Length: 106
Length: 106
Image (cartoon, rainbow over the protein chains, first blue to last red):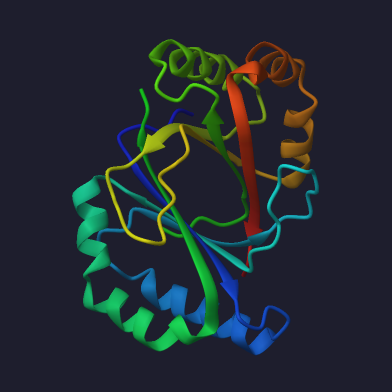
């Protein structure tokens, strides 16, 4: 299935304490609450798979993949009160966050 | 919509000649052919969105996001003749490739 006309917002989180199960759960709980933002079409809360090759980065703690219909929907997500509350409540948990935003190439 | 029971294989390519439209098109064409691998449930060929914040990496050329039903489907994709041919024909185009594989965290 080709996926088109979408905005993919893929965020990778590195926890300050990656081996702390409680911290990991807090982030997952925060993302679960965050998923209620209305403009989100699809979301996935992930962790590194058990794959291993030179080109694979398995160092992150949690992956947060969101699909929006439009760039505007992603912009409105960024300033949604639910998102701002998530950042306020959970940002102390991570040491690094890396984002890749993609739109259709063709 | 929650997406569960999936394996997300997200690949970011940095082209050797990122400003060369022909090289970019060759990679897109190669990925389009590659998308015919049977175990792929959903694919998206992307380019950086016009977003800009410190945490966003916009330096890549092409994003290739695949969803599989299972880790085994992703393994079979890696050794699929169509995939091997893609690597053989297109790998000269990129200088760097970075992969994030994710499975359900919850």
